Image 1: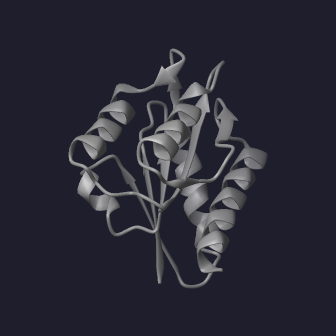
Image 2 (image 1 turned 45 degrees about the vertical axis):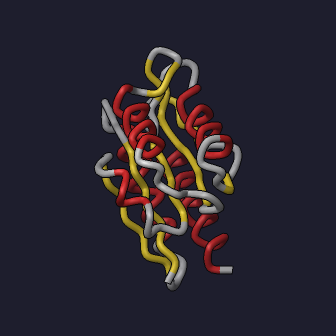
Length: 145
């Protein structure tokens, strides 16, 4: 059974709402295990086939929590090579954080990234939540084929 791990940080709850909807979408595909967590240990990434990072944009950048988490993954040399990677996040005016996360996944961790990242301005409405569900479903289908 393929496993998707979603790790995220959320200041206002908007990126968390996105993560929850992505989980819903991914769970519609059979034989996919999906788990969402606020950032924790970098060692939790090793058993996953796909890793999605939820990164809200704050002052044209990723949050301190997101940056620190990715730095810990690199510091501890967690092997993510060839795992599927994707990024998503809410933003107010610019949306750089998920793009930066994808760049790190692709160039530093040598992951197979799904582009573009999923960006939702401010609070996700019903249409935005549906985009999140479709994003989760797309990634799960990618793993199940």
